[in-house]
Image 1 (cartoon, rainbow, N blue to C red):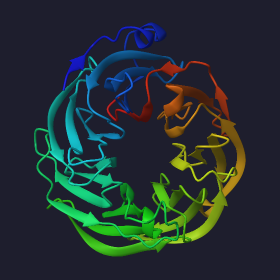
Image 2 (cartoon, rainbow, N blue to C red; image 1 turned 180 degrees about the vertical axis):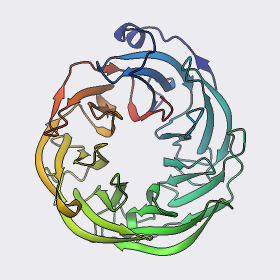
Image 3 (cartoon, rainbow, N blue to C red; image 1 turned 90 degrees about the vertical axis):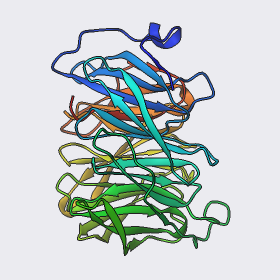
Image 4 (cartoon, helix red, strand yellow; image 1 turned 60 degrees about the vertical axis):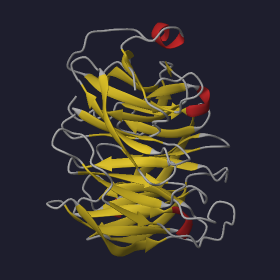
Length: 365
């Protein structure tokens, strides 16, 4: 894997440069390769002005999802390959220069890893086509040990095309010592006990079932950890849960994908916990906006159209900007966010790069 500090052509000329200072965040973008993309792209992003500047790149195959370690010195990126070469990669990150360097990789033993989460002790991958969750120890120097455990997902949903084999789509550390995984083809959320001292997971049961044919995709927690929000890909609904001790209790379902395109994608909560945003694809693509009310329940307040295939998005730590990875439009759109109303406005400060699919800010920025 090869690092570069300069990219020629469209990307280099499209982005301004500026010195790193107080409101500048370190940001890394994962892309799909094979169509001119290098793989991973490091940027600085100014969360006051909304302006991005390219810093470096690293050649990694199909890094469709990545997660930073809490120290900001390492990140872990999947190589979403549909064969036995699917891996999780450990990458050193230098926040001073933005440079990235390959450390090591381990086989996921599950095809198409599409999500990774880490707490610094272990790294977990959700392997979509493999229908499994893989566990890796994170060693003291930030490299990955070989997979130590794997848990299988299930099938049983009514969609004979999309749910005919197991799929695990997302894995999250809960606030209280549990791990949750979206079991896409069985329309349920799996729960695991997590022993951080030993770095081990053990099955705990089913946190909740959702309506058959929903296809649960991404799950997020409210800032206080009392509620969780699930975006289901096939139904296009968000399910609101009360959360405690590895269990989810549904309190509301509300439609995000009003085009019924079966393309529900990502979901995030604003840093202040007052708003929830969800991306939908394939028809009428964009971000659906919700206001959070008593008990964590949602009220829909609008929809903001985006470029083609908004697979994922993120919100700056100060809540001022929402960035959308528009895969098929070859750009990241930068929206300003009204903190009082939750509404979005396109700043027209697009970041042009091939096939972006994941955006993460370094926690140490």
